[in-house]
Image 1 (cartoon, rainbow, N blue to C red):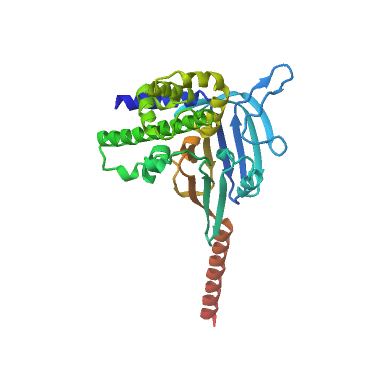
Image 2: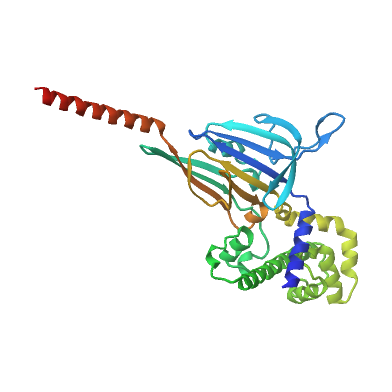
Length: 353
């Protein structure tokens, strides 16, 4: 549907205007499970004092991380090109240490505090490692649940991808299915922006019965506003004026616009996180056994992690690999030589008796 594509494009551009932050994070694990992490970002500097005007990272890094200001460098991160001019790095004895140090730092910024683990299982010839990083769903509350519009499977498909279950669909069938999901997703946004706007207006007006006529008011706003991202207290006030044939609500908005807009923006705070993005790269030793990384380049596993993927559920990165136990091969070889040598000596004694 052309309308859906235009609507979603407008929605995406509007959210992008909120200035999402982009990062590149490279985690390198050595054969013993120790990790080194580098996080690249773009920082703004005061040309006079030669210092950062603002911390570009999602956590306070100055005490424990090594900092380097680098020449402006462009990286291809998935579908776009990003520019970075600084890098922080830190080496730890286990990847879990990153999680422990940032635990509880910022409850709203889930991209800053993933839950990471590296489980080791030692065998004779090989040691197997299971890597797992979980970015938890954003904690927010909307008046109307997404469950009323999309099934759990549709929610995951829309925000995180995963077309494995739909391999039998033709391109046209898949396009139609995604358009249907997209329409329902935009309807969910529209309804919630309307409900939040109406609630802020109700707190400032008791003259009209807004709750009792909410469904009729919603229809009027739907006729007035075509795009979900345009629904806000001002537009709902316009719809209320049309519905009640008055100018009361426009005047109310003009007199209280700052407080109405502030309350509305606070209620939809999660929108500000949707375009925050991390290009997560993992470098592992040994042989890769399995992973859910969508991109593997020169032995580096790559995931795109952004706020949109955390809108309805956790987003999990996994990888399993094995590392050869050199000592086991050497010891086994030595034992074979000793055993072989013993057999030769015993056989030699047997024939000399």
